[in-house]
Image (cartoon, rainbow, N blue to C red; front, side, top):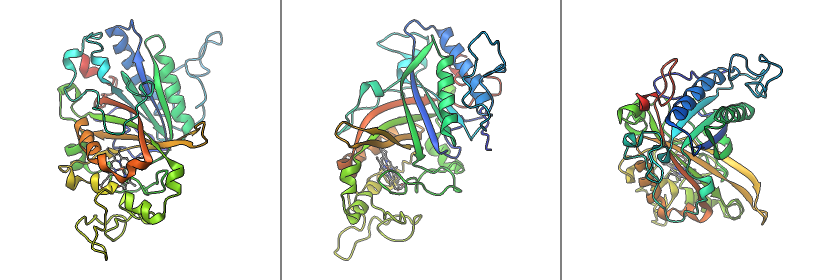
Amino acid sequence: GVVHPFFGTHQAGIATPVQANLHFAAFDMADDATRDDLISLLKDWSYAASRMTQGLDVSATGAVGGSPDAPPDDTGEALGLPASALTITFGLGPDLFEKNGVDRFGIAARRPDALKLLPRFVGDALDPAASGGELCVQACADDPQVAVHAIRNLSRIAFGRAQIRWSKLGFGRTSKTSSDQLTPRNLFGYKDGTANILGDDERALDEQVWAAGPSWLAGGSYLVVRTIRQKIEPWDRQQLTEQDRIIGRSKGEGAPLSGGTEFTEPDFAKKDAAGQPAIDMHAHVRLAHPDFNHGIRLLRRGYNFVDGNDPLGSLNAGLFFLSYQSDPQRFVTIQRALRSDLLNEYIQHTGSAVFAIPPGAKQGSYVGAGLFA
Ligand code: HEM
């Protein structure tokens, strides 16, 4: 199976091809945790991640090699499973640097100005218990059991130092980050990821995704997380032409409504037979397009989710939106442009978080090391 090296210039799980499944968790440090606790946690996490991404147990003794009188180091449910393209990506939230004016870990002065809470957007209905977080771990794999095993074991390693604040399971990638991948579909049935930044587009990655500084973050990025509830039942009652108009692309082919095929550039000036814009002025792809957003593009890496149904019988489903960009302000610009998006009638943002994503660790070192140097 595919193995993505854990060590390298950039953390894996950003430009590497997006996998089929996700388990994402946000953590908070324990109230009495010290700087040494934070450093040791990042070291222990990096070591365990470097093993699990090779398809190994979290430690050398692992699930069954230790003392029979002690709980095993590894929980065991991934025994015998291949690495399954597992990537584990670590991030640091604004509150880690300073919370309520307290510099718990001696890193407040190193917080980049760009790393701060996102502003409130029109229509937000955020649940604080499912937002924020001081640390995050994005585990993606082609086997859900492998992704869940990773979060479960990292959370176990964190015991006493940090604990899960909220987490999310995702299935069905809603983006593509490699030209070999077919464009998948989101829960509204549309191809999602057509115009995404691809992992081999070095120029776009350098210009749009990798952060230039501060020095401890150079080669890293910023992750914006938005849990977006999709109102599935009203959407499903909408006519196909109306659905197409809202997105600005055709459902079958994923072509822009200005014509052509999936990868034809949209022509926003084109008029239809009635003299109206072929792509509605408030279609999602128009408002989100770089032409109207100072050339900004995001590397989208989201997943579908379905968490059963709500008490009224509607599916509790949506898009777990993940985007990587060189500055969270880029996301803010696009999200603000989406204020009048026709899609807004059918979606609601219910969770939000932002994290600085350190660069990859050198062999034998750990993610975030530059912050403590
Ligand atoms: C494009 C769906 C939320 C940013 C698209 C496309 C679809 C889609 C079908 C066209 C195919 C593609 O290029 O990927 C959705 C749905 C959403 C959602 C169903 C909510 C549930 C968002 C959010 C953002 C965003 C919150 C960022 C703030 C973009 C961007 C593009 C795009 C930048 C590419 C535009 C282009 O360059 O043509 N989206 N999207 N989307 N979306 Fe979304």
